[in-house]
Amino acid sequence: MVGAGVIGVGIDVVAVDRFVASLARTPHLADRLFTAEERRTASGHPRRPTSLAARFAAKEAVAKALGVPPGLDWHDCTVVNEDSGRPRLVITGTVAAAAAAQGVGSWQLSLSHDAGIAAAMVIALAAVPG
Image 1 (cartoon, one colour):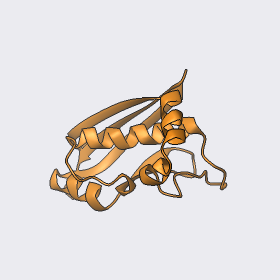
Image 2 (cartoon, rainbow, N blue to C red):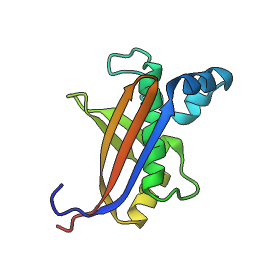
Image 3 (cartoon, rainbow, N blue to C red):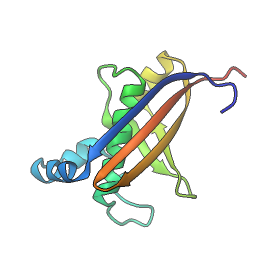
Image 4 (spheres, rainbow, N blue to C red):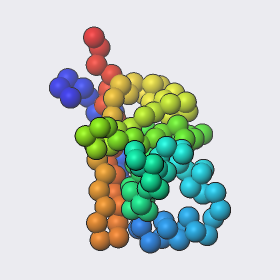
C-alpha cells in the first residue's frame, strides 16, 4: 500500500502435529481460539488442521505486530477468505482497540503450510490520512 508506514510486523510458526495434539488433549480449545466460521470452509466442511494451525499462527502474529498488549480476545482477530481464496484479517473488539491506539489502518497477511509447519506473517500498516 503506497504511502502507508509500517507500525509493526509479526511472524509465527506452528508445528502442526503439536497443534493437533493440543486440540485433541484440550476439550473446547478450538472453540476458544476460533469462531465457528473460522472452523469451517466456505462450503461448510470442517477446516483441515494445517489450515487451522496457520490461522492460529496469524492470530499470534497479529499480537506480535501490536507488541503483545494484554487482554486480546482470540475471537476479535479472525481470518476469512476472499472469494479469490486470499486470506484477510477481520479485526474487532479488543484487537481493534489495540490497533486503533497504535494508529493501525490496515493489515497485510500471508499464510503458508508445508512439511508439518504452518506459518503466518502480518504487517500492521499506519492509517493513511485522506
